[in-house]
Image (cartoon, rainbow, N blue to C red; front, side, top):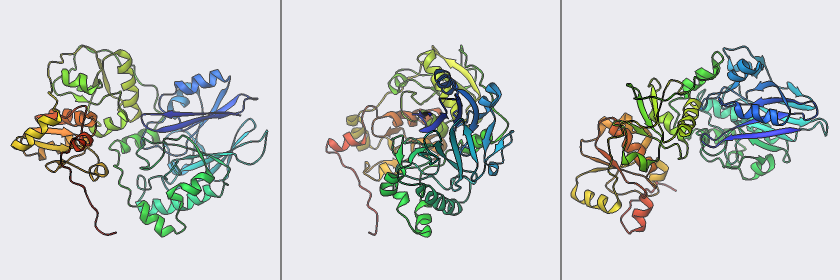
Length: 445
């Protein structure tokens, strides 16, 4: 049996190539928009791609099913409840998709989305029983799916409860391969581990600890992970007519009124950047997700990169979350504006003098662990939207390492706010130097 997992480390998305080595037939499950890895692996394995299977209409990343259909002539199979606007093969509960001796049994598992399906895979050359399941966006390693992205949170959670019970009934020995690992917004507590077993998750996954549907629903409805602003756009792209290959990203002499996205390191950004540029380093974690929170869906984007390869990598990430209108890339623009970073000693002086407003740009659960008394909470992803609500004083942004602080400062400067980041250090170092923190304590017990 041919089996290969592909993980997008930036978005935390997983896709799969499954087939029969003897016949050379293979299918792609939940492909990403960048399809070159599947084609390369199929060629390496001397396999012929025969079909695309989608567990559901994805909301966090653009699918590659359109490219595989248009460029490779592959049929796309998905549950009819997805109501796709493209030609598709309907798959429903109990259907079996075959690739040689490999049998892929469809389990309709609504909850995350009404059309969601899992795929139980058997190698009939060895046994009829399924030995692995592709759980899509239902059961993760250490967590379970969000129920609030396609339907009401209560309705989604009730469906998810029953779907998870079905997966557990597959048996403890069945291997579990999810559609996401850590880094995705589809689950808050998922592991970075790429696979598990039903038995291990049954014993240790908190989402499977509930035997009562009401208790499970109440717990899942407390999901606090932010909703991606790009979600509706991505669903529209994935549900609509097939989306073909993107236009190549080309070099530019000037931004020509496009928004400049500086993907170099935060240090390179502060030392000299295009006036008004946003800084989201491609070298950091979750580049595409951060871009999705800070860039406007209708903004044309010019990428400022340190090399052509870096620009191409940024383009892949941006397109993966629905930013298809890329003006091009800049390698040597007029980067005449500097942003002077702040160290902790200067920050202490500025706070003592009352000369600045300090913004803690971490997420709420991080801030609850301890924050500087004079600070105001403004997650980095809300910086552009909330810039007008600030009181007019100069701003200093702070996080744990400086990366998000630089992102937030760049977003505020883009909106006309005098903002400077604390770089290379942050809240933990402030505490270790004996400076005061306020700890959030929840009431009750």
